Amino acid sequence: MTENILFYILSFFIILILFWILVIEIRLKKIFSGFKAKNAEILISEVTKKTKELEEKQKRIDEKLSVIEKRLDQSIRNIETVRFNPFPEVGGNQSFAISLLNDEGNGVVISSLYARDRMSLFAKPIKDGKSEFELTKEEKGVLKKTLK
Image 1 (spheres, helix red, strand yellow):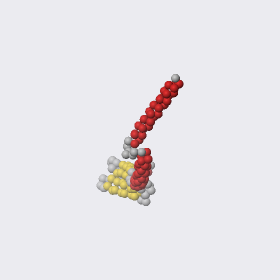
Image 2 (cartoon, one colour):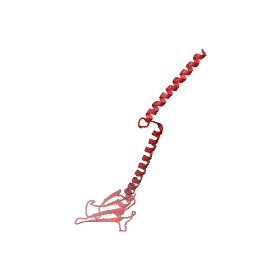
Image 3 (cartoon, helix red, strand yellow):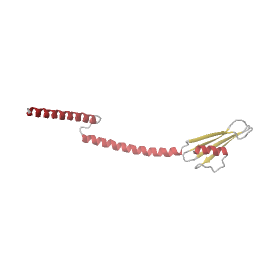
Image 4 (cartoon, helix red, strand yellow):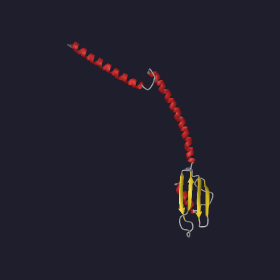
């Protein structure tokens, strides 16, 4: 009687161990499915190689991104326009001031003064948010809006 019980217990453990081996075998096949590797050492070697390639690519991408960020900081991205009427006797807001600045506060303010008989256009360079030329109140206003 005890021999039968012992036999059943051992049989149960043998079946359990076989099932566990089968589960491990299935998992290993899933791991090796994307590779031509025949053992874990080759698989680890291939994964290490791919990881190094990815790190090199990431380094090149970071370097290019740094260059792009520098160029982007120097590009004109801040634009504001103000229309106004400089002469009360002329109807409409035909005159304007427009500022075109990069993130560093460098660029230009362009303004136009419209009158019945003529139109004047002015461009004033801006360096670090300031101009070496006298700015009108409209130009100062548009510059202030742009620098916010």
